[in-house]
Amino acid sequence: MAEPREVLRLEGLRKSYNIGRPNEVEVLHGIDLRLDSADFAALVGPSGSGKSTLLNLIGLLDSPTQGELYLRGQATRDMDDEGRTALRSRHIGFVFQFHHLIGAFTALENVLMPWMVANGKPDREITDAARGLLAEVGRGGFSDRKPDQLSGGQQQRVAIARALVTRPALLLADEPTGNLDTKTAAEVFALLRRFNEQVGCAVLVVTHDPRLSATCDRTITLVDGRIVDG
Ligand SMILES: Nc1ncnc2c1ncn2[C@@H]1O[C@H](COP(=O)(O)OP(=O)(O)O)[C@@H](O)[C@H]1O
Ligand SMILES: [Mg+2]
Image 1 (cartoon, protein in one colour):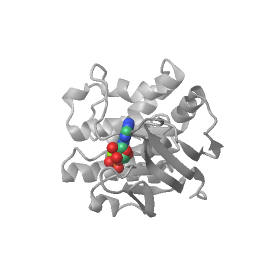
Image 2 (cartoon, helix red, strand yellow; image 1 turned 45 degrees about the horizontal axis):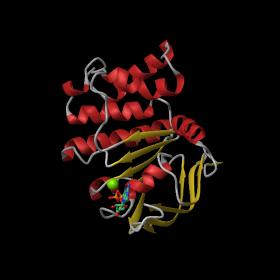
Image 3 (cartoon, helix red, strand yellow; image 1 turned 90 degrees about the horizontal axis):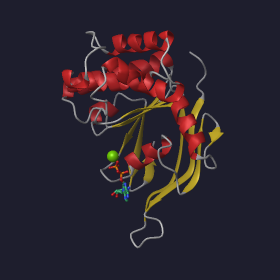
Image 4 (spheres, helix red, strand yellow; image 1 turned 135 degrees about the vertical axis):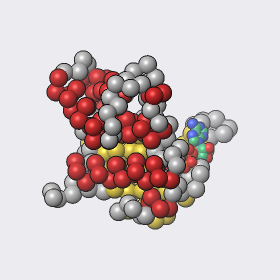
């Protein structure tokens, strides 16, 4: 396997909400973190500790109040929205607790969506790649089914294929199994692990399930907006 390569580095990352208002509140108090290409890391911590806030910052969906975030060595603080969007669509895949698949589209169309946002009309090559990903995540073929014709676990598998279609360096997953039964959750988690090992995609996954976090190489624990372990 290739040498681990830095995917993400956070330096003194802080985040406040409601800046300048009476209810201004700092929820992340200086986060330092590095993730490498081979990492499969759990992000754990009590509800309200800042896990989703941190994931949104890492995913360039929101901006830190202070600190610097390097994605593939590139500093992001001074980037404009356009630059951040481009960087995000090139390097990051997302899986959320609820799949956020588009109901009117088939599984295949949903998987192609992030690629289309970045590149336009899908060509033969990416369509084949998307079909291949769907075949890998699902044992039965469900490319042509709409989300409401799929079980919760199948929907989450499609969401994982969608997150991986652009071949991101980093996969962020916010409680991706929070809505699934124990067995299905373990299967979906195993799928994340498989892609981590097969394509060297770094994975940072929020989970409340200690049995799942125990299967990760690293556990990063967040308490009251600070990393206390990991
Ligand atoms: N948009 C927001 N505006 C104000 N406060 C927020 C916002 N989003 C989250 N918070 C607060 O930030 C803290 C961390 O929330 P969150 O990141 O969602 O935690 P977790 O995902 O660990 O449950 C909580 O106190 C929450 O109420
Ligand atoms: Mg959360």
